[in-house]
Length: 142
Image 1 (cartoon, rainbow, N blue to C red):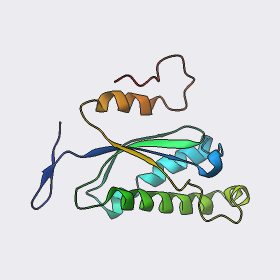
Image 2 (cartoon, one colour):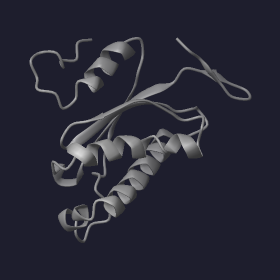
Image 3 (cartoon, helix red, strand yellow):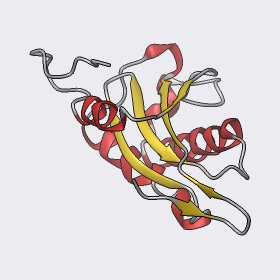
Image 4 (spheres, rainbow, N blue to C red):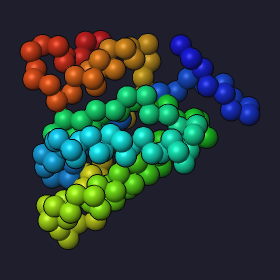
């Protein structure tokens, strides 16, 4: 277990985050999915203390494990990720503007977040297997 440090804090805080596409549209396939994965890691360029540990997609949602320092609100970090990736994806893939015409973003308003405790490896394997055909390997067992 690797601990991170700030000026007055030592922490190990990781979050499992799930966000679905607006209207659960199945847009995260092929090049769009790969571009999203690259794009989500850009947050580390602007906030080096925020780390994307793992990220993967299914057709209509994404999962990721992020390390977010205690000085940031989780909801603000998720909002930045959703806004920046959505904007970049709509600029890169013009067809998304047709799918989401008259709409501000491609992500649903809500999200799921939980802290990752001692079962991080189980959750990490679950995320790695997103989008693969389920033959029993992607079941989350706690």
